[in-house]
Amino acid sequence: MLYNLLRPVLFSVDAETAHELTLSILAAAGRMLPAATIAASAPVEVMGLAFPNRVGLAAGLDKNGEAIDGLARLGFGFIEIGTVTPRPQPGNPRPRLFRLPEARAIINRMGFNNHGVDALVANVRAAKYKGIVGINIGKNFDTPIERAADDYLAALDKIYALASYVAINISSPNTQNLRQLQDASELDALLGALKTAQARLADLHGRYVPFALKIAPDLDAVQLAAIAEALRRHHLDAVIATNTTLARDKVEGLRHAEQSGGLSGAPLLESSTAIVRELARLLAGEIPIIATGGILDGHAARAKLDAGASLVQLMSGLVYRGPCLVRECVRATA
Image (tube, rainbow, N blue to C red; front, side):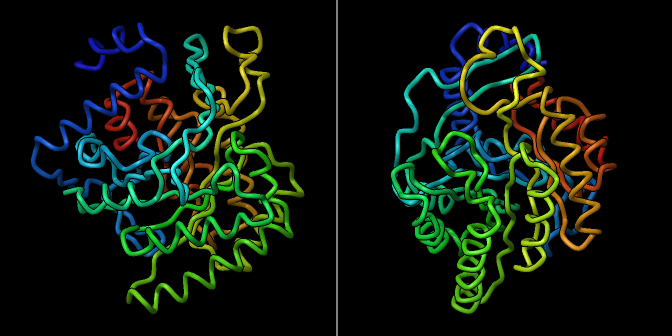
């Protein structure tokens, strides 16, 4: 109800300003209120972790981990923060975030804008919430693609001890050449380096932190099969399907549809769910799937599970539906 009153105000300003305002409100609420405790309404074990429910927050909303405590009060079973890079970076020039309300969609070309891994670590340490927090890592925009692994490893060293799981983002369309890391040889080298580091860090910290790979929806059958084989070969703990899409066929002719960047929201549901379904076939239950993309109601969340996912994540749908979407999806996936 409260969000229904706030939404016209938020939609009266540009999308990024509204995003910043919402995050500030959530951060303030988190500081003022006691730590949230999420009741295990539909508990499930995935990646060796006990989730109180299947519905999580996708990376991208809280890039710096500034509003963990406020977000935890919305009822998520887990929260993913980031994408964070080793060094702070401003991202792409504004405007870089656009609503397409007729399609209940968003286009963004943010470009991994964040305060850097040290700032995120400080925020996670300060958070009162003790539930599952995933940390999504990426590379700095000015790091050559052939040295991308250095950035992932540098971020991993800083966040490993604090993360419930680590999401490896190689699929944002807004960092030049990043999706090249999905190619077979480059993916093999990156995952090999990360898994070696994981073993070292597990020994150092006395705990194993699962890894999840986040992939794009814009993959053909051959690419997807190669990724599935790499996930198996390197014993990844999960795959997140999917990131935003470069396709515009579902929003053609709408205002802002011509903007560059990744498209999310309702138009992504069909293609991202198709990726989940094909991954489920290829992986045959060996590696769990975390599904995100196009979830704007409980039926869409349920469809992801029916396609083979174990968990779901929300983000763009929150812009159009608000916190009630979390509760609806928790009920639908119980």
